[in-house]
Structure formats: C-alpha cells, structure tokens
Image 1: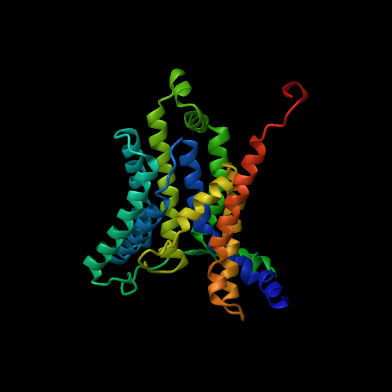
Image 2: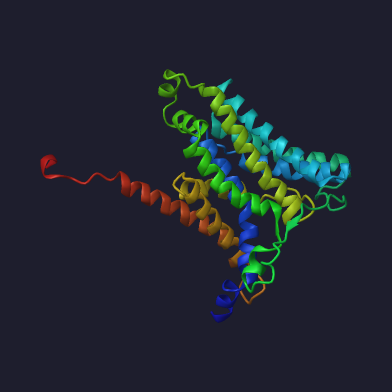
Length: 311
C-alpha cells in the first residue's frame, strides 16, 4: 500500500497525469462543442486517429513538424464537417455516421501506412519528429512544481488553455450563445434569425479541430511515430468525460483530468508487483463507474418528490 501511495504522490506521477490527460481533455472539449451544437460527435476516435496518422506521415515526408501538425488538424476538421454534412444534408443518424467514420479512419490509416511505407504496424521507420516542449525559466528549478509543469509538450499547454477558451466561447461570445441556443432549441433559434446549419457546421468543424489536435499529440508529442489504432478507445472515453462533466467546460476539464490520472496510475502501477491484467483495466473500469455515476445523478435529479396535493 505504501508503495502505491509513493507512486501517486510523486512528481513523476503528476507530470505523467498531465501529459496523459492531454488527448482526453482536447477530445472531450471537442465532444462538448458538438453536443452543444446538437449533434453527438461519435467520430472523435476516428478524427484523432486520422490526425495522428496524417501528422506523422506529412511531417516525415515534408521534414516539417509544424506542417505535419497543421495537416493532421485539417484532416480531422474536414471529418467534422463531413459528419455535419451526413447529418444535416443527407439526414443520416449521427451515431451511425460517427461509427462509420471511425471504421473508415481505422481501415484508411492502416491502408495509407501500408501503401506508403510497406509496414502494417506503423510509421516507426519514418522520422517524423516531435512537437517541441515548453521549459519555464525560473520554474524548472522549483521543487516538485518544476518537475510537474516545466518540460511539458506545447500541446499539453494548449489543451489546458483550451478549457478557459471554450468556457469564454460559450458564455462570453455571440457565437457561443447561438451555439447553445441551436443545440437546445433549433426551431426557436431559427425563428429569431440564427443560421442554424451554419452554426452547426462551425461547431462540428471546431469539434474536429480539437480532436485533431489530440490525435496529433499522440503521434507527435506523446511519442514520435504513428501506430495502428493508437487511439485505443480514447475518443470514447472522452465522450464519457463530456457527460460526466455535466456538459460544462470546467466539469469536462475535471473529468478529463480524472481519466488521465487513472491511466497514469495504470502506467505507474505496471512497474510494481501488481497483476498487469488488473492494471490495464483501470481506465476502462473508471469509465464504467463514471457513466454509472452520471446515470444515477440524472435519475436523482429527474425524480419527482410527491407532495400533499398530489396524494
């Protein structure tokens, strides 16, 4: 027990939790924007995977990490627009369309890597490089704090800035007001002159861009190469964070941190005398517990308390 506490209280664990929470946070914020626009983005997984593959391939062939990252985010953004088109123009079910895009991304990335590199596993043979880290002068030498925050990847910093940005977007801008209005009552929003479809297209594009940044981090920040299906369900866990956080930016932020901490704990416990089968289930078990907690909380809020007049 003491060894587990030593792991949890160490600066290495805290730094790993922030790093591992990065893709969860970005993807969850993307899912939140889509939910607020009234369209569930089940394709977060596929958008992350497509961005991760595109970023690594483009960076490797162009020699520019920046160009690779931008191309990865652009591909995920286009998938977000495609999801909106399938839903709004063709009337497709958003859940089914999202699952279809996920399957397309899984097969498409594997085919692209095999066609270009003749490798079924990933891009480990291609030098794609990594996005830079951020060192904070004066902070890096501070005990504990310096080890935790200094030296984190630039995308991690962008992820933590994305939470206040989304909160500001929702509650301090006209677009955020329109987005929430469209997601809650599209007919009422249209009746007062809000361009419902344009707002939804923009929301899904922003959702895809955030998920794309999460995917780029996986292949160009977390590691420096792409591996087939490397998202490993993170997009679906991010969706759980959206609902666990009550569909509010700061609630989603805390939920994503929790999932990141759970995965970091699983990684750290792997070095201790703990069965690996048990360790690998920690992030997914936490997801199930979180969804059960969310369902219980919704049921409790919706429960009608009988009054004397109704008896």
